[in-house]
Length: 328
Ligand SMILES: [Fe+2]
Ligand SMILES: [Fe+2]
Image 1 (cartoon, rainbow, N blue to C red):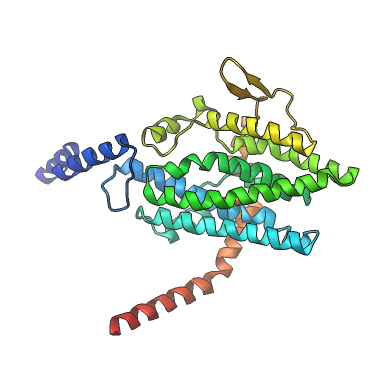
Image 2: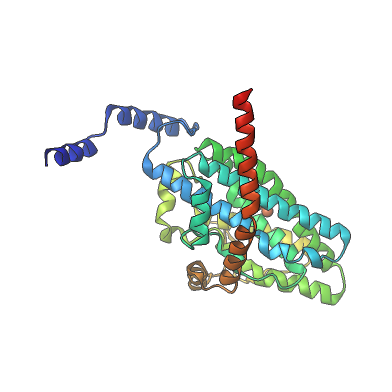
């Protein structure tokens, strides 16, 4: 009994080390500096980061699927090479982010396990099908475009390894966005059927891309805490409005339109406004009932199983190298 009470007391009163750690953490956040892996950090901060960074990593690798499907159907060798490079970049993004998440103490196998057993989420956008070549354009322009708007502020995230991973990712994302825009531009200037195909792709990806920023601010309670910790810098709605302002300008260059007649700039608030989004659909997709959830997960599990020999070979090689180093 005595031990139990002691344990409870210990839990209630933070140790001197924790107090000093908390003071250090608070100062770093107040100074807008960086927390590094070996620094003390509150458990909730660590958990939030592991969840966010691993969700982000999962999104990168699941996001390879809709575009990978089109590598064999690219209309020219040049387009094939570009698309292949783009899809490979996304695998790289997944790797940087899994590595960043691992610095917080959760092993990669566990993160994979969370994804494969359906306990972890990934971006809802990748549960929509890519139906035509024009979708490669719409995905690059709108999906990678929304990712950039979301991710540029994350380059300043208070957790060092995450912020640094985002710098490189953002550079590659801007190439992705431009390649998507260029696909649409070429189609928009092609035959009437090609132009229609481009418009159709924009019509289908517009709303899901806007939903990538997450629920409205009043339905996103964790955002506030993330902003206090300098992980997030802007709210979901702020980022979404910024994105709408950007694409409503760019779509004019394409000579196409966005499927939303409510877009307008509100002089009073200084913000872009847009039509209502179907949040019901968003939550359905998030719960696994989107058009492609089952297919994406099945494909991911298959790829994971097929990759077992690569992981085995890599760890055997690493063990051998370590042994060699030890002997030397
Ligand atoms: Fe990416
Ligand atoms: Fe990308």
